[in-house]
Picture 1: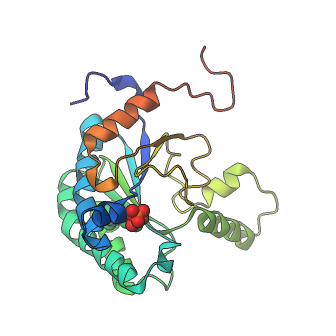
Picture 2: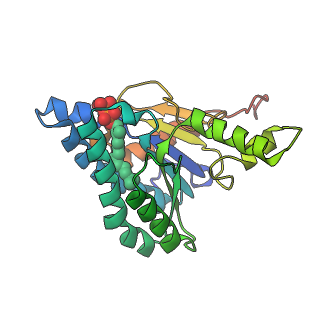
Length: 238
Ligand code: FPP
């Protein structure tokens, strides 16, 4: 059910989310930082359900960045195992919900082969689904994505480059640019997320820490989005 305060004609097609504040949520409670990530899983799947409920077509989350390797080895290991467990445990239910799972990021030797295989299996299992496309940005960096796209262009021998040339060489050329990017936890930064794609996205920063975020907060962010005037560099409608 779409809440009555939202205009059903202007539900963003693609919402992307930086799920920030798990560590602080845990520290505030005297828990381990990793307990915050565990608590964040519940929020994530409540928000995914909310997105499905109101007909969002693409939903993308920043699960592990190219910079997250700099965290203490124990937390990196936890995050790798945690992501793997989520893929294993959630793929069947997402498949039943007609969700198509995609991964976005560098599939290089830093990522354990086992996890690369799980990612591919989840994508293969859900590739013909026609509902929400749920993209997990994993070992993802916006600058790395642009560098990788430019390298592909050079390797192809193309001599003239346009914006379309870059777009066609991003990790998933079929992914539309996000209409709305949400970051939780009160931080007002982009942190190397979807740098190319968010050129004209509306940014909503929420003070809520990710483990406290729910589909209600998602709907509130969409309300903020709907109250804005998107002009894409033009003069808009008014
Ligand atoms: C940021 O909190 C959150 C993360 C680095 C990871 C979040 C990952 C998930 C919830 C799992 C997603 C996995 C899949 C497969 C969909 P932080 O540690 O930066 O928090 P802080 O800013 O308070 O320290």
